[in-house]
Every structure is written in structure tokens, then in C-alpha cells.
Image (cartoon, rainbow, N blue to C red; front, side, top):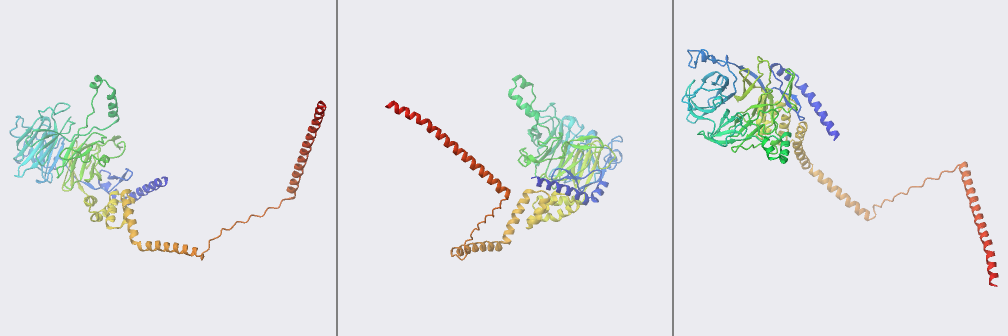
Length: 590
């Protein structure tokens, strides 16, 4: 056991050294151009340097978003000369694939911005026409979702948070939208909220037109409405995380009185912060509570059941896995993971935004970590860093992040290394291991410590029948199960390739054994006699030893003689005593 541990420790040290040597030029170049350290985790869950899969493309503020159109009287998007042209506390961004447009919830400006694929302003909506409640203006909208219907109508769903409503609006122009549906607080006995309010923040709409809303202070899951706006119940609530306090309360309830039970607070699940829906209709949720492990990220089916809630799913870890949080020496603080938003891109990659660290964690559809990028900094003018990252979106192979404090949109584009990595992962997840081999090789050439690449190359070698090479790759990335499988196939292949020689060797041994038995029975081969070992000659005794033995013998003889004389004398005395007694008896008889 100690030998195995020493071997692992040695390999770990060698791997780290090779990583630093092989990446000394490439990684340093990436670090010089990017405001963040790109890294991943090794077999021991230690962070190690890695090539940057994403790089900062550009940062967009009010100036380069062409938002001056709102203050130009000659422009069709003119609102007023005093209209703010910069973002203010933006909370959400949504990309509509059909139109190839971005929609941003410019929260503190109480408006929804419509941008083209180059992030240039093409629309601005501050309210709706024909409101059911008579309130036509937005008030701090936190979420936006857009659907293009079959007839071409553009439907914009707005989480009008401070107005306590969800609006379904038909976009009729660059500045106007018509109210089609207004949803207020559900009048239902099953609707529960800590503050007895209805504050919708984020929304999404499924293929059947059902509306889901994440609401503040609502921990029963998202509020679900049908296409007509009727409240249907709650969807996908988180489970209660088992902690020491929860266990203590459970034990105390077993012995508490009725009055004590009334005063005790029951454990409640944590409300999730955001969600997204993929092309297949699965809804993904994320929870922002710091250090949460239970249901941090979920994949829900139509019934609201987490399909990752199984033996394998219980082992999924999202965000930084460094114990005790992430230390930032510049601010002298420790950050704990707070997953504030997530996005499912067109290829199925899961992009999860961490508000605490400003990092984006990219996972494949099987929750395997692909890459990490981004950073948080208090320097507001540092390009590519964040102060208050609120939302993440993906399109055209890029990642778009909205910062509600710096009031900008940062665009990260895929590097060449990232392109190879993503293509390799897609082929690998599709089971096309051999097709993924050249991409994995390119990844490994640029990042010699990428365990995912070693695993992929091992699977490719295994599928091509090169079991010995597969074993080497699996050993390097500590894939024990895959290594055992490759070894099994390698052993079977060796037996098949050497079957004739093995069979002839077994037959030869069998024939030799029979021949030996026959010859032995016929006496041709005599039974070997065991040789008796000769006794070693006795050592001659010295003169002193002989004299000493003679003395001992004479002494023993003298002692025996003295003892014999003593015995004879004792017998004589006994006889002498016996004779007078006999004579007295004779006289008495006479």
C-alpha cells in the first residue's frame, strides 16, 4: 500500500513538473493577454495550469452599443434627449436563435433592450400598450424571454419584478409592444411565499407555451402557469440540504413538547436563482446559496424530477472544488462558490456563472468539467474581469456575460485550443472515440496535463484494438476501470496470438509427464536413493578433559562405595537389634 502511495506521489510531482515545462511558453503567453489564470483540476482535485479555451474578444458599454440612437431626434428609436444611454444594473440577457438577436433586461433603467448579432441597438421597450392593470411602464424588470411563433410574431415575456407581474408582449416596432397576457400573484391556496408577494425575476417558456417563473422568497420551486396564464402549481423544488443543524432539529423534535414544536422553525429548501431550457425541453436550474451541495445544479424533466438524482448524480460537483473556498490575495478575502446563472448552448455544453469569483465553469452533457475561465476584480477598467456578473448567454461560439456593476457586456470568443477541446468532447460524448483522436492529440500537444485528453486517447486506442497503448493512457490519467478493461482485452489478445505456442507447451509437458511415469515403472529410470549423511568424526579429547573425567569417575565410584558401606552397616545394625528380641520370645515360650 505504501509503495502504491509513493508511486502516485512521484507521478503527481513528475506530472506537475512536466506541465510547468511544457506550458511555460504557451501558458505565459495566454496569461499575458488574458486577465485571468486558466486552470483545471487533476486526479487529486488540485488546480493545475491549463491553456485558455476562451479569450476576451471585446467589452460593450453604452458607447459601442450604439445606444445614442435613443437621444437622437432624427433617429426612429429616439425617446428623449435625457434618456440614459448606459446600462444600469442589467440582470438578464437572452439570445433568440431565429432572429439572431440579443434581448437585455436593463433593470435599473426599467427597460428591455433589443440588440442585433453585433450587439448594436435595434429596439428599446420601456412599457406595453393596453395593460390590463392600467400600468403600462416597466418597473425594474429582472428577466426577459423571447419566442418567435410560427406566424412570425415576436413574443416578449418580461419579468416585471417591482410591478409584481409577468407580461407577454407582442413586439410591434422598435419602441412599441402590445400586451397579450398579464399574470399577477396567483389567487390560490397552494401559492406560498415568505413575504406573501409575487416578485418574478427570471422566466422561460417551454414548447407547449407553459410559463415558468423564478420568484424572490419562493422556495417551493418555480411558479408554473399554462399558456392562458392560469397558475398550475410549483415545479422542481430543491431538496433540504442535510446539515448538522438539520440533524439536531430532527433529533430534538423526537423529544420536544407540542408547545416547543410550535415554536420551532421547520427546515426549508433553498430557492434556486436561475434556470435555462435546452432544445429537448429539459430545464436546468442553479442555486446561488454559498457552499451549497444539494441540488446546486439540476436537470429536470417534464415532471420536475431531477434526472441527475441517482448514485452517479450524487457525486456531481459544480463550481470550484477547492476546500474552504477560493482565496483572493488582492482583496484579502475568501470567495465561496455562488452559482448565479447558467446557459445551455446549442451543442449541449453547460456554462455556469459564479457570481463570487466571476468565473465561468463549462461542463459537457455528462457533467464532466471541460474548462474554466473568467475572473473577478475590483478594478472597473480591467477588460474581461467582472464586479457583479449577473447573467451568461452563448451564441456563435462565444460567451456573453452581463455585469450589473460595471454596466457592460463582455464577449469571450473560443481560442484554437478551445475549438479542438470542444470538438473532441462532442465526438467523445457521442461515442465516436476514434474520430475524436486527432482533436485530443491537438489538445494534448497544447496541454500535456489534460486528463480528459488522455482518457479520450485511451478510449480511441481501446476501440482500435491497441490495448497496450490504451493501458498506458489510462494509467497516466488514473482511469482504473478503463485500465482494467483494457488489461482484460490485452490478456485475451495475447492468449489468442500465442495460443499455438501455449497449447504445444501444455501438450509437451503432458507427454513428458506420461513418458517419465512409464520409464519409471519399467525400471529404466531408477528411483533415486536418498543419501545418508555421514556422522562427523568425534573430536579427540584433550589430556585435561580426560583427567577431569577420570576424577569425576573416581569421585562417583568413591561416593557409591561409601553409600554401599553405609547401607551394609545399617542392615547389620538392624539384624543385631532383631536377635535379642527373638531370644526373649523363645524364653517366654519355654
